[in-house]
Image (cartoon, rainbow, N blue to C red; front, side):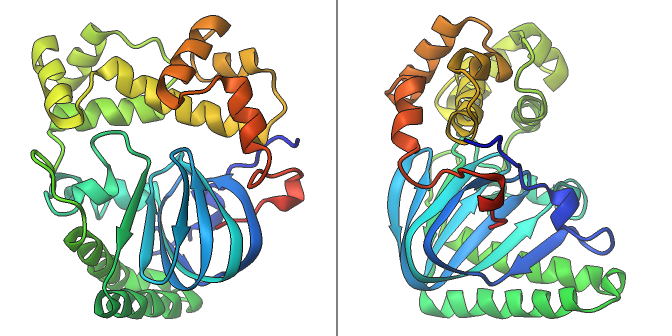
Length: 298
């Protein structure tokens, strides 16, 4: 099994203009497991497939939308002329022009799910899908030109049109919406440095609030606590390493922040229901890259 190649925004997204990339691939057969460091929405235009993520397998058909946050892996299996329209947003856009969207109740759940859920499954009505595809077509036309910097505002406008359509079909939950600033600060810190030995007191100082307030925010908005939320993030990253590298299980645990192999195994099993070794054996049957040449970008 080859060492994984992470698909990075630095190689995909343009150096000028908005940090946006679109494409229209067609998949047949199996498309190997891959991950990336940018936000992605994959809209199913036609065809069928099975979508594999850390949450399991689910069928795809026209109108389905898969939203993946940075760091989440996925694969398309048994593709039958699966035509996709992909929208990829880089960190520069999310931290720049769209930074305000993380505080917008209608958009925050799509861009940064509060519960740590790495994958959102949505479904668009035919008219909404057509509007999204029109916006993606316009972004593709801008992308094909030479003067991206001159169209930055229009790129952002087209992205917002798509995000608005996704926000309309997001499941409504009590307390959903924009993340409180302390919670958003902590979750960004976890994503940037998940292997660090974070302490609750240190997180509270970083977030600018008391430990009690931080715990209440986590419980109210995610249904869990910071330790469990971080553990889920580590397990997701460990799952990618288990399926896409030949590194020993203990080494994988250390790479995500758990130097004790037994503790790593317990946390992994608690969240995914199987041991790291069993997860590797099951996942390797399909959807995992076997050589560096197997990697695809979306």
